[in-house]
Amino acid sequence: MSSILNQEFFSGYTPKVAKNLLGCFLMREVDGKIYKGLITETECYRGRHDLACHAAKGKTERTKVMFGEPGRAYVYLVYGVHWMLNAVTEAEGYPAAVLIRGAELRDAQNEIVKKLDGPGKLTRGLKIGRSFNEWDLTAGEKLWIEGGGDFKKRKIIKKPRVGVDYARHCKNWKWNFRLR
Image (tube, rainbow, N blue to C red; front, side, top):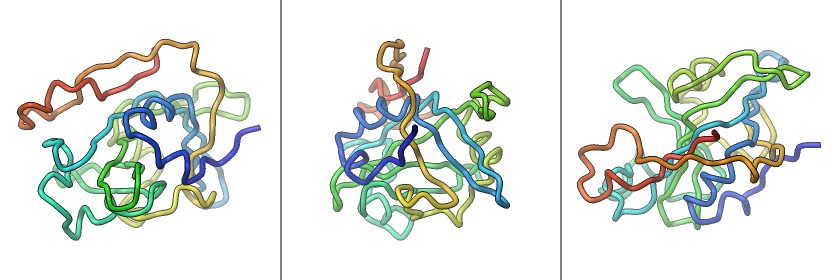
């Protein structure tokens, strides 16, 4: 039996939360139907010292959710085309979040129906947009995350984050995590 992840889960150290989200289920209710996506890839952004983090330049209207309660969704548009879904982490007042980069849609028998391999494909496939910014991912309504199976024994691949070459000393941090 899966359980909805609570605020305490999200309040931990961001790289640990990012790894622990692997194997969990991103749940989305659309028109009475529940979609279940096994989270297969995450990436973390943490604090003002992280030049790849949107909050590196401080608190703005766009980034204020990152300074808020852990377990909230931070949803933003990139390249004017793709919505990105993040889960806010750590303590309120400290800007940090985990980008959900990939998932596998599963059916009732837990068989893979579709791979959502990329953050834009993920939000498009699950109909996630701006209206979910600041959404409470711990409430269990419309969009939430549930604990998954035991993936601790599976190998986690760590790589540098994607598309952050501008971030100087932060660009090579191995904060991209994938299930093998």
